[in-house]
Image (cartoon, rainbow, N blue to C red; front, top):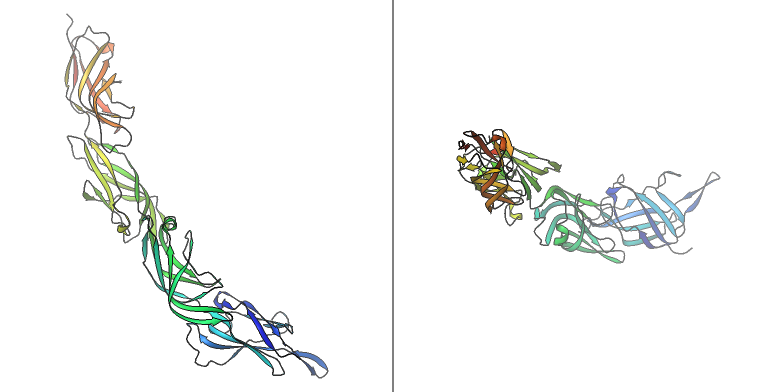
Length: 449
């Protein structure tokens, strides 16, 4: 009979907390013994024993007794299965009280002969994450990110790639380096059990990670994850895509504005701070918010400005500060709005000769032309479009092409030209909608000669 020897144990590295695992021992000389019990032949199978030599953290075992894998009942309940003189299988799972660590495997035949393989099997403990640094990052910084994770035991081997990733993240990042480690051998390979692992995240990948608050995960081998309870903040740099309306009329009642936001991350503690014209201003509401873990990504901010009776156009910066990690942005997201007084009519009394045909008048003042839309004039309740708009200059910060103009030429409907008549008129800007002059202004038709 050949002497029993063990050539290999597979798998050699397992996380039992993930579920049951089947192990295969290969070698020679694995032989059961035939028993004759009252003429009824049966077999005594080889025993499988595990002897722990190192604890899960790599320190030496103080002398734990061997643990025998129970053979189980013949049939489907068998934990130890003799597959022939060169192969034995056995099952282990979380139900067996086998502590984590590095083990020697012993196959003991019923006749007392045995084979032993030292450093044959490492049963990994479920690693834990105690902390990580940094605990937040700027997604849009354009810089590489290095993150260190503390806890363990993190088992580093050549068999499996140790990776770091964010829950619901886009990428997995391979291990760059580890420290605070204990080295050991597992069969024919080196093994390290570490308490600090470090990962590099290239800038182009950081920028594609989803914003929000994410748990941190480290996978050192299949099926054994370390999952943090704290969350890592991947903070985007918010942007203001638009403000609506961009030009508002100061003759109206208090006006509500809507900021269309991108990547605005908020939580109950860190609410964005709004400034309008350099002064803090209350936020009416946040809209389009989607919950992500303990925070939210919001799409809109509404705020209201009261009427202030301005006499000229005022461009006001609107900025968002107080961000979750405000240092992420080189500057707060900012846009502008223009508060416009109603159209100013300086030509409040225009004399018109009754014998002009066609007749037109020139109105002087301050009016807005936005894009291809021009001011309109209402004469005696009738809307009249200008023939031309002149002496214009651009309004800074406008969306599209907005011009402040000083003169409009307007035709006068022939049926309104009655000698001695006074034709009241107002001027209304196209943007902001409904912004109408307030002066009492008339076109006075002269008497017939």
